[in-house]
Length: 191
Length: 101
Image (cartoon, rainbow over all chains, first blue to last red):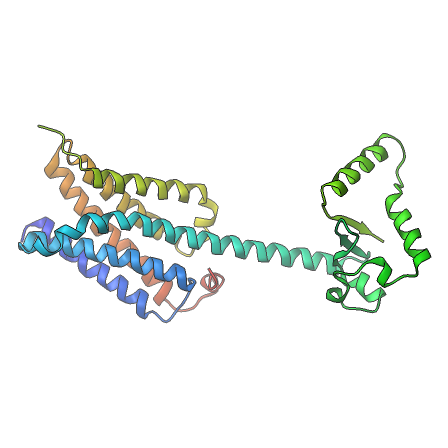
């Protein structure tokens, strides 16, 4: 067997070993879908190496018609694998960011809340919920009307619409708030 | 010598370059993977093999064919080392963080 044939044989043995380790390995550092895509990409590499070996052994006839299809699938499988892995990493980053945000809100001594355009609570911190005698999840979806008498609700609404800052900066802030309200964005507050 | 480029080989190279561009666009996330250098080197060798497959139809066919097969070997070895390190090695702190990747 020439040198190239020997290289192909070594590559075949190594790729089969890699595939076996992937399938039989006890650790599971990748999600199931990423692992399946990687296994497919490695299986295609095994096929390519087997085809190269058979070429030197004179038995290529059986695999050659499939080579073009397999070769086209190979970059696609690697691309899908990287896509799935990057998506999983992105989700993990998002979870970590939400956790940091939650810890920050829980540790602040102020009462913090987020409201939607209909003045419903979207998110409140623990201090805010504790003052109402509830858990934060219990406040979500409710409005001031659920906790305060009507007169106090009106006072609170006036207070939250009034801007403590005067002058151009105050007017600019009011304009931003009105634009955000028209666009249905969330509003936030601190008490 | 007439250039001999097959459409299928060119398509594979273009798809491989697309995946390369996607990985470069997500470089920061790629580097978050355990032993990412081995995986990345493995893919680059595979891309090198696809490139050499196309180029051997244009010039130095025997030399580039030999290099192509060396690239396939390196791809298998590097991918094998990555799989061995990530899937078969003992659980360690740095890898445990990637369990849900």
